[in-house]
Image (tube, rainbow, N blue to C red; front, side, top):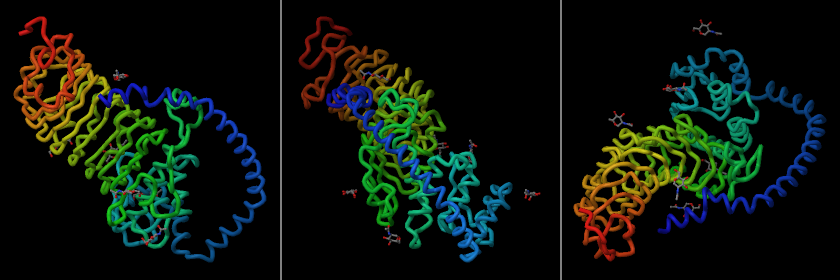
Length: 446
Ligand SMILES: *[C@@H]1O[C@H](CO)[C@@H](O)[C@H](O)[C@H]1NC(C)=O
Ligand SMILES: *[C@@H]1O[C@H](CO)[C@@H](O)[C@H](O)[C@H]1NC(C)=O
Ligand SMILES: *[C@@H]1O[C@H](CO)[C@@H](O)[C@H](O)[C@H]1NC(C)=O
Ligand SMILES: *[C@@H]1O[C@H](CO)[C@@H](O)[C@H](O)[C@H]1NC(C)=O
Ligand SMILES: *[C@@H]1O[C@H](CO)[C@@H](O)[C@H](O)[C@H]1NC(C)=O
Ligand SMILES: *[C@@H]1O[C@H](CO)[C@@H](O)[C@H](O)[C@H]1NC(C)=O
């Protein structure tokens, strides 16, 4: 099975391969560190000379420039701080120079963005509003949010981009700064780095001044909104930022297979909140982590057709709620997690499910569940010792073309119609309790 061999070859997330590169990478980093320190000393010297000059210039700009804009922002920051959330949630103010009454761009907290894209006026207001809403994140000058906003103010396209484009560029910059060369709890194990991590493999054009639709891995709709983001095996580290949620109204395909970002619990999945357009979501072989099965937030993704969360760190029984509304789901891959329980009814009854991969997922139960999946074409459930029952149930699933049931306790005979199909697509263990096809049985199990 191609998927299994790929998995074994790669080890866990390519650890072996990366270990071999490890020494080289360390050396290279050591060198660049030395270079960086040299650069830092020069930079500090330059700053010491130039800072007074910059200060003088900024003060003059403020005085001479568009007072209603920059002056307004600055005083608003001090004046309105304590009442910011109240003002911003109060909706349509009539003072357009007040960043907190400019319609309903409101960021309630890190897991909730409320955006009215028609009334959001400028990048400067974005910064001010974000600072009000996430005081903690913006207190740290090195936070990815701060880096992203600073980049946005310096480099973003200023020729009347829409508010949605501003938010989109902010979200992408957050992704860049949060996952490119950022250490997490696992990066030392994979790469040996302690306070950083290796950069993305490919980052062509990322956070360049040009249109984000041309950046590596991105495709856009005709309106210039991100519809597809593919960062497959791109050595992303750090954690996926909640700000990804800002792409939710346009993103249809997200492929992050084989990366090293680490996101934990419900909070670590909040970036999925509102990603209602998603049709393809590939998160396999990453370091998502959740202790209560698959997080409930996936249950909102009602347009999902293809979902892969194989070999992420999900543990605990699958909950039916997650699948109740996924009525479009055709492909589901939940391999290599530790669910330790049955497939819930809501999953078993998904009306359009064609492919189910649940290998090595500690699934417990009876194979007769297949009777409820009338359109099932591909069923791979290897290495689930808790999976049992009579293979005769498979006879009712006449659409089945590919079956793999090694390492289970399913017994009985493989239906003969499967034997006469594409024989390369049937995998079972002749030495176990199953018989049929070209295996001969020493026992008649039933
Ligand atoms: C905040 O708003 C409340 C009610 O509008 C007001 O009583 C209070 O003085 C304001 N606080 C500050 C610091 O402006
Ligand atoms: C964030 O805001 C949402 C919506 O108002 C709320 O449901 C959620 O509990 C809030 N989360 C935190 C951590 O405050
Ligand atoms: C800047 O925005 C304008 C208007 O949306 C667009 O026509 C132009 O191509 C953009 N320039 C870049 C470099 O993205
Ligand atoms: C997506 O973008 C890439 C690179 O810009 C391009 O080669 C590819 O054809 C695009 N795919 C679609 C479906 O538009
Ligand atoms: C599924 O849809 C129902 C009805 O719209 C809703 O009440 C429920 O909260 C949804 N479940 C999830 C997990 O989003
Ligand atoms: C089975 O899944 C666990 C994670 O739940 C993983 O650590 C292990 O490597 C997998 N085994 C195989 C043979 O893929």
